[in-house]
Image (cartoon, rainbow, N blue to C red; front, top):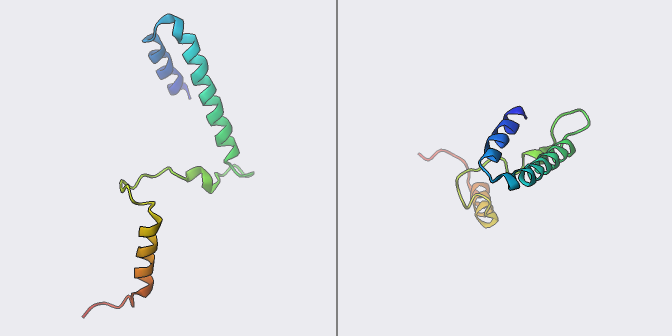
Length: 86
C-alpha cells in the first residue's frame, strides 16, 4: 500500500493545487471501497472466494466468452470418439 501512496503523492503534485485535496479524497475512497470488497471476498478462514478471481485473466480472444462458440466446441468434443486417426 505504501507504493500506491507514493505514486499517488507524485501524481497529485502534477495537478493544480486546488484539485489535489479533492483528488486525494476520491482516491482514498476508491482504496477504501477496494479494501471492503477484498475483505468481503474472503472466506472465514482467510482464503479467497472463487468469485474474487472472476475476470482476472484475459485470454486475448475477444470471443472467449461467446457462449454459442463454447457450446459448439463442447458439442464437437462430445461427439468425437477421441481415437487417434490412423
